[in-house]
Image 1 (spheres, rainbow, N blue to C red):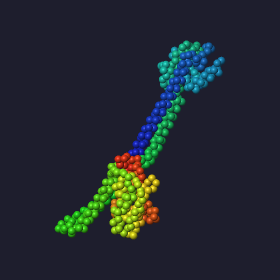
Image 2: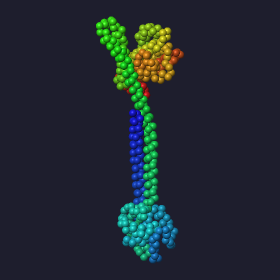
Image 3: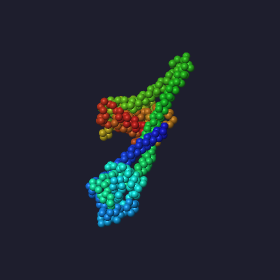
Image 4: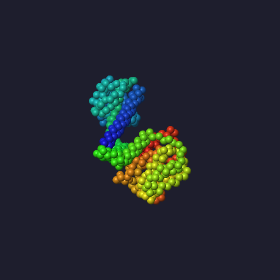
Amino acid sequence: MFRKTALRLVLLYTVVFAGILLLFSAVVYAFTDHRVRADEIATMSAAAANLRACRDEQILPGDHDDGEAPPLHRGHAPDPGSDGDRLLAEVDETREQHLVYVLLAGARVVSQTPAGSLTASEASTVARDGLGARPRGVSVAGVPYLGMKVELPRPVRIGDAPADAAIILYNRAQDVAFLRELLTILSVSAGLFAVASAGAGFMLASRALRPIRRSFEEQRRFVANASHELRTPLAVMRLQIDRMFRHPRETILDMSEVVASLDRETSRLQRLVNDLLALAKADEGEAVLRLRSVDLAALARETALRFAPLAEEKGVELRVLANDAPAVADPDRILELLSILVDNAVAFTPAGGWVEIDAHASGSAAVLAVRDTGRGIPPEHLPRVFDRFYQADPSRTTRGAGLGLSIAKWIAEAHGGQIRIFSPGSHGTGTEVEVRLPKSRSAEPGRGRFARLLAICYKKNSS
């Protein structure tokens, strides 16, 4: 599923990025083409203005009184005559500007400059092309030109023929070649960048889907574990109910063992459902904290009184080190957190061991710590002990469903605190869980809502 999603995202990234590149390339090419065409027209307009002002007769070969017009053939230039230096300089400038002048007497070609730019037939074809006062594209022997016709303000004598008009041609060969090269570069670049974007898109898609895949796997594992935990007590209850139906004449006293089993499984199922409901409310931000000033030392002593009978039954010594530890917290939630930690500590501490509840102030925080001399937690399991349904015992024969530490974690973080676990503890054996809570009210809304903290907690648990 995620592979197909990644491929769709890569395709989407590539299409979007390629579309942006193509649009960018089209804009660059259109802008460049417009600027090149504008420069060409500006050059031709300046040349036409010079002709109309009679400032270009010096570059028109044959404008002399020797009675002989210059020949119209390609590859040979006329002799410059007395104004040769100036003529050659103007011709070189004209060549740099890619301009060709064709002088007309009526519809007949009488001269051109630079000499030999066009053959006689090409010049005649241009003269008959019907060019106007505005530049337009023409093709001469396969070479692209811009051409326009300019009426001279006074005739210019070329040999024995007075020229009354001139055709200005702008050779666009280099500009067209430049635009083609630009188009090729843009096309190749767009293709290369599209391929690169596909690779980058694959990396980005994989990276973007990583937390989603992890969250999905966590959710699937959560559902599987919840189903397993719910199925076990239900299966036991179903088995005991079937047993009662097989012996309909027996009294409740006769079925006391079955009834006791049903009671145990019902209680277990109720605890599991309550835990799941608490976590669901936390995830949705619907759980409420009723914050007020409390003394964690008093809560530690109250928890010790609750678990004293259980500890005595197991032969575990229950200690309390309670100093003044003021904090702003929900006492019911803190009691729930301490109950989870002490219950785990007593459950996993063998007879003859001890469990210690410590409450004290430390700087700007109030600290709760539960230490035991139990069997501890293997190092490889420590990073995951706060995951939902996670149990270090793979046989799953231990009591509980593995939700207690998850609930303890979000209670601590909902108060703006943090919870840490060490194994072995500071006393060199067993396990130690430390909870640090702020002494003063946090910047969270005073109404007790902690949706944002719970959302952060959920993200951390899911990642």
